[in-house]
Image (cartoon, rainbow, N blue to C red; front, side, top):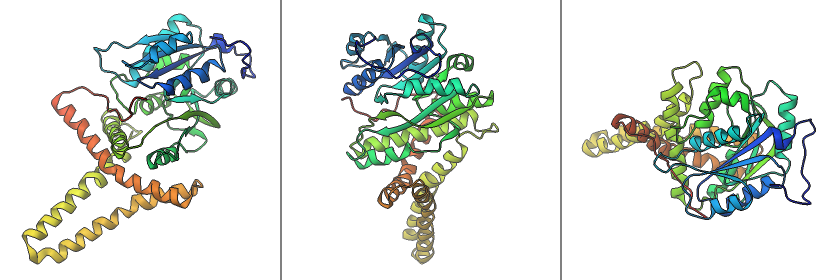
Length: 358
């Protein structure tokens, strides 16, 4: 996997990237995004790389093989999930190199920053109490669409100990094995669920103030963004079903907010309008109630706006982000309802895909 003449960023510690670090990349029809991802990895490390493909119909598998990357094709008879892909890749890593100390998970639509692997290893060597380390994502083309801009803002966050990381992070292999890995039935929110279990066992999740990956969400249509938000609502409902009654109250706050602003208030508003149409004498009271409901939506808007301003975002970006936070409540509510309907009918989880193949 080495490239002649290519200088690599080596860890300051005595860790050998080739022998101690393994990398798992997951993808489905990522095309050029996957090419950037894999090239960014082979240029900075000799670590063993496993690419797990979820039924791609493009050239993803052939390209990965051309770089000498190990490829795992997921069984198409079993529903695809990102969690399943990561677990499969990890199992293949450990079968090839059971002595690996660290595993880096990467989504196939992310280009890894040149120094990330070595820097992550250095941090875990210095902080033996930390189980998982991640850095910051940034969007490749935040200016290409308003949706890309909003998602680029989403990646901002605090530095230090955090409650959960995203799909791109480096784990200690021993701790990951003991945890049982990601929950393969989950179509979203599997990272937060795993981090919850790790923290219950005393693990620490840490974000360092470093660039980690360049992400390409590639959202150009409202429906794509809407579907992505719907998936988040599905994850909230499932997270609450799994761990909501525990001391952590996993996703309880998020689900309550989603159901109040995305479902309860719209239903109340519609009922108020219909009532005023049926009973004209109540129209004044109905109008007052409708006005109050609309004003109530200012609460999440102002909260999101203030957060963005505190993080140093521009006024225009802060207003845009706050607006989409409110609109997302409606889609998230549909996602949560989708989860409950599936559960009531005994249907399994199905992927909610929002991206188009490159």
